[in-house]
Image (cartoon, rainbow, N blue to C red; front, side, top):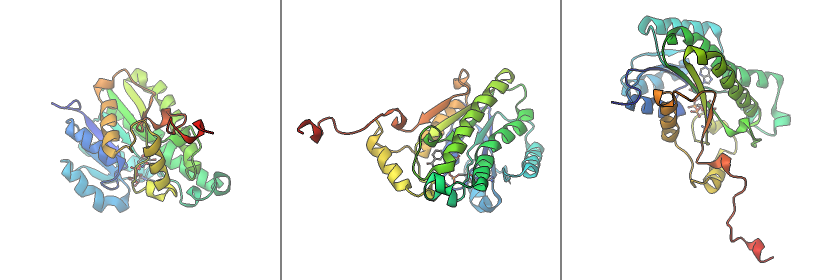
Length: 267
Ligand code: NAD
């Protein structure tokens, strides 16, 4: 029996079979969870067959930038599920302009607002909407962050600020909800080539630098992230909340990386 047997998970942010949400969905399904998926309207044709592969016919469109769509989405969910145990928030957005060029040149008031609204506020909104379904259960919320929350990274720009906000969001939600039995954590994943990440100029260089410098000497996969997320949302992680868990091959722990027998010994 899997370690998520008897649990139900709502997964928000599946787009394609390269999505981190797909890695998470596969791991949670393998461990016995029953799944529902909320996605943006234009991804319906991709999400429905993926959900079916994991035995789920519970999929619905929901734009997290709209309070009305969130309310409608959870009302629809209520017609099938009276309770669930896990919320997966795998959603982020910044305009291409906001991710092109330097941070100081590319960051507009509107770009800042949109990135923070969709990538951070939506966690607060979706967690609030999930609470009635989680009452009296050992429940867990998980979101996805990136190293740009804590370090400057070329082209990541305003998304780094939005991820810093998201990580603070995790800590404040964890503090509010711990007494109700709801744990809230984030995974800070290393770079992975997904639909969203493909919009970040320099992704190839990011992948190359991580593979060269990370202790594990490789990039992480959606399976690596999915397995860690499944664990964090299971009762095996009952003592963990408010945490940012790095699943990045150890990259964030390295100060510098170069061969120990480098040229400078001779100069
Ligand atoms: P993805 O493109 O597969 O997923 C992003 C999802 O966000 C998509 O399903 C998209 O439809 C959804 N989304 C965007 N705006 C939305 C809206 N208004 N309403 C509802 N959904 C909306 O890419 P991904 O890389 O799997 O991204 C998932 C999460 O992982 C994001 O938070 C991303 O920042 C984070 N992350 C990604 C990487 C990476 O390198 N790929 C690294 C660290 C963290």
